[in-house]
Length: 306
Image (cartoon, rainbow, N blue to C red):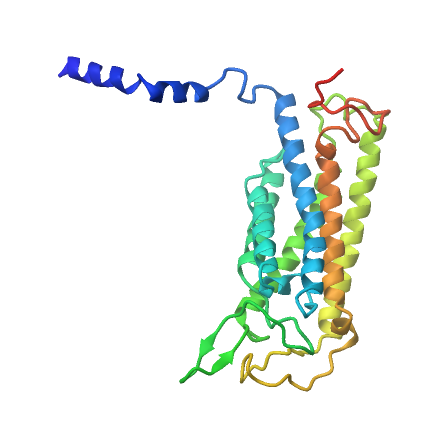
């Protein structure tokens, strides 16, 4: 039995299989072994989160402009064919990153996990209504059949529990992101000899950027809260009783929805989030580095040419 076993193992590692496996042999110099390598990897991750958050509203703006209906909010982009998938995929990607973001302390880790969960809820739990005020547009919708083939509800109604959960998760997500900007990113890493120096101008510039983005995010959150409570009319081009086959309900949207201010407010919040994380990622390793405190732009660590 022993010889057969050894013969089997020997055969299994010979031939084409062995030549293919040779490409995937673990390399001693590949795993992260130093703090510097860990910081570099984190910079790249934060960079891509910032880029995704910054670009998402731009893509959804284009999607809204070409879909026949400019939705009231970014969350209503969920219902736009194709672009709704982009919204869900991108938001889930950011959420997963936050959920697995280690950070530099246990509180930062916990805050990131909370933000990641909120992002996942926002992406997978749709908001209320269609987001269209005065026109019926082609949309990805939820069908609820009543009796025959009549569609009774095309979208979750405005008082549905899913919309309430979505709204609260979205508000909490923006609050978490503002906390990151104001308190987490501005903290000084005492283990970083470069950052702890009093004359590190790049750290001061980064803190100013984080603070400005955080303050503007707080203002954005307050403005959005005002708009949703003081000037929010429940206009929806999709009839709640006759679904997509009914006539457009007679309803005059308020100033807020008529100008899609929720969409633009959320755009501003995501842009500020993206800018902060782009700076946190040092632009991928060349912007506002601690190691070169008197140079705003430096040669990145991945630039191998002399």
